Image (cartoon, rainbow, N blue to C red; front, side):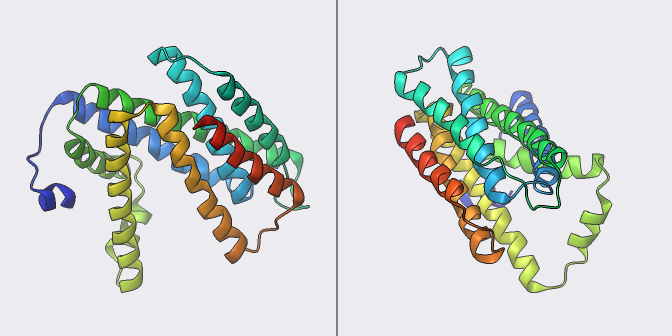
Length: 240
């Protein structure tokens, strides 16, 4: 909302933009929900790397099926490297958790990957249909408010309303601003790039939570995980 006011862009009202914004946020809401469930059973590095790889594979094939793009030999190699990384990072969060817990974590991870792929396909479709990006971002926030009310997440609403600590308030404002900027520049990126390439570049961001988890949560860096990291970098290089 603030972005529109700051940039002094007139809000455009049309059914397609509003419907697409509500659809995107509907998918993204469940991306977050399934992510939180998955992280109960998987380490952050296992989740985020495989989440990016699986969703990238889905978007690669979606690009071929829906947007008639050819797959090169390098793309095929990249896909198989992704499966190798997936295998290398298949590990339990700790020794107390059963293989069933790990399977549950990967099941929710798969849901997350499918949903985020649908998010990016919808955004790409909207950009190709020449939607007004800032208006689209505006209605995404309206959709978020509506879904909070629909899902009756009153506890979260009350926590925000009763937020008196400046540090927490500043964090929420900063996080919201960063999400707005990310949503806007991601949408504009689709004007000049295909959905698979743009998303693959975004995949570089997975290293940030992994590194921070190693620093702050003392997650172990095993030899298999290091190999997986290197293979991930190789896969990104092949895809670009």
